[in-house]
Image 1 (cartoon, rainbow, N blue to C red):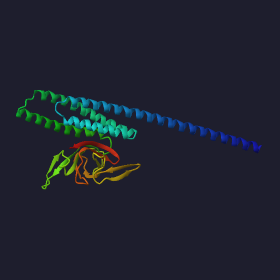
Image 2: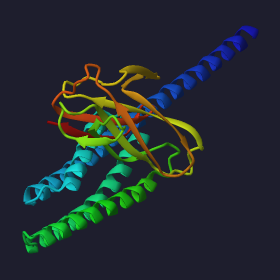
Image 3: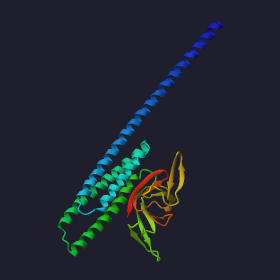
Length: 293
């Protein structure tokens, strides 16, 4: 009798163990299936954002080609879109990353609507302008006002990321400068005349970021695809970043203009296209480019 009871107990224990094993296997399979479905959906959404950005870039190409006078604002916006496309192609496929790129796309869409509308106005105005000195002065004043309005708009657009407690930047630009003995800086597009490269950007207001000492990594890549400046490496988990310099500043929950300098190790600069990237730790927050002739 005791032998039968022991056997029955063993059978029951084995049965329970089998049920638990099958349940665990089914649950694990279901989790993997949902994970794969989510990853597929994220990849599809990433491709949609990529397509939207490409379509936006084509609209800028058309506007630039139709403009009789090169519009630096359109060209600059087109460059930022290309930088975002390049960054999106190599970015991780996850919800946080995709959300950030969607937010940037929304900002760029608003900027494009404004720029194209203003560009149409400028084309109409240019058709009516004469070659007289007065008309030239008027055109320059209108473009200066247009540039000022864009700076105000870029600062306002930066608030779209206020839900994320991370620093972001707007208005990133790089250019060569001639440094006089008096300390005066003169912008130049000539590689042979440049003494330094100057990188300027605005750290956007974000009340969620704790006030105090902050830092961003600036990366400048020369025409030969070399990282300029100190070219030191920092590790973030499984990722590494080679940077040109670390921009350190005191952040007080308000928009802050920052400018840094990058020098050449050979005291000479190559002719060609330079790419400027700003990283908040491992995350790319701004990209731009310029050319030295």
